[in-house]
Length: 116
Image 1 (cartoon, one colour):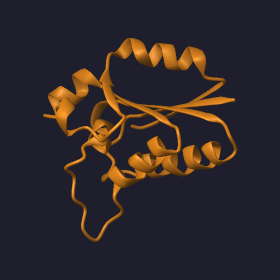
Image 2 (spheres, helix red, strand yellow):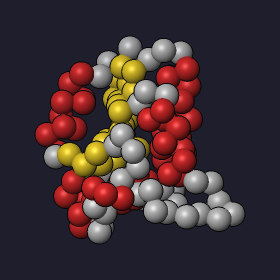
Image 3 (spheres, rainbow, N blue to C red):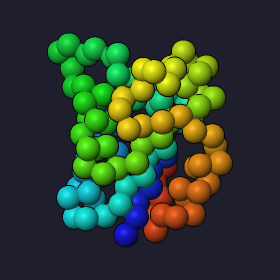
Image 4 (tube, rainbow, N blue to C red):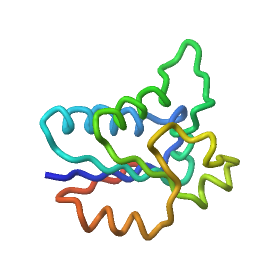
């Protein structure tokens, strides 16, 4: 089974990215495919330059999911609006257009949206 997630909320303001992390990790451990589309403020989660002393590291959480086989993409327009460039994305993630979200929804057996 392939499971998809759309996350829109900022990773350090809301728990949505944590929920996706735990659900995606469990799905990957059971052998399911995982796609994650980051939209609006959620794109911040793939900024490799974020330092979060004393807090969980969303960047490390995303890196772990990618290492386990998850496909994580960020909306390119949302990322550029927030000053995120390709050279500061965590490894094996990318910016993409909104059409990719439609493709992800189509190829997934289940699709979950978390956000505002």
